Each structure stands twice: as C-alpha cells, then as structure tokens.
Length: 141
Image (cartoon, rainbow, N blue to C red):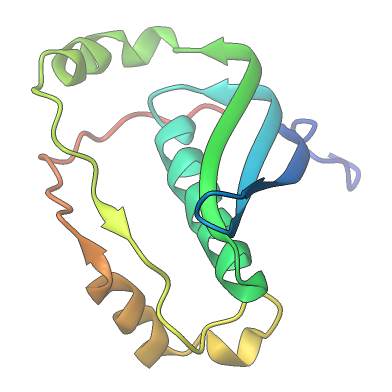
C-alpha cells in the first residue's frame, strides 16, 4: 500500500466540556466524540467503553466528576456477513450497566502508572459487570 493507511481515521474529534453544579459544588466533565465511521457490532461497543474509561480517568486527574458521554456518528454500518449475528445479539436481554470508579494513583498522563497491578485494580473497580456469551463477528477492513 506504499505506506498509506487502509482507511482514514474513524475518530475525528473529542471535545471536553466542564459544567459546574453549584448545588453540589462540583465540576462535571462531559465528553463529546465525533466519528466519521463505525462498525456498529464490532467497534462501537469498544469505543463507548474506551471513551467512558478515558473520561473517568481525565475527570479523576483534574478533580472533576465524570458526566455525560455523547457520540455523533456519520457512517454507521453493519456488514452483510454480520447480519445473522446481530439478530442473535438483538434477541438478548439488556443487562444493568456496570459502574466504574477509577482507583487512586493511575494517571492518564503518566504511562508508568499503567502497570499490571494497576490494571488488576481497575478491573476490580468495575462493579456489576456481567458479560454475555461472546459473539465472534467478522471484521472488515
């Protein structure tokens, strides 16, 4: 491919916005993401979890409370070879969303804090996560 990427980047823009809740006297970090394209059954769930994690991490570093994550997507697609698997996923019962609170001592701007021990601490901080059976979707590039 002569050093060229296969596709242009799907993630175009991330906007961070801080609101102040004067009643609770806390600053709330909201994140707005704009995406050019997304493979709905494969990429979107990972993107949502990743951006929520990033927002929580940044909020904690600056003493904010993580607020609303919103994502605008332009080209949302499900490939033909994913349709039967999407039907299986849509038949599932929706569970309760897990809760995550970033443990102390892990900073988004300090890679030395991303140790195996701290990854384990982050997994332990995930409360109420009940994954369903894995669906192996084909991935298109």
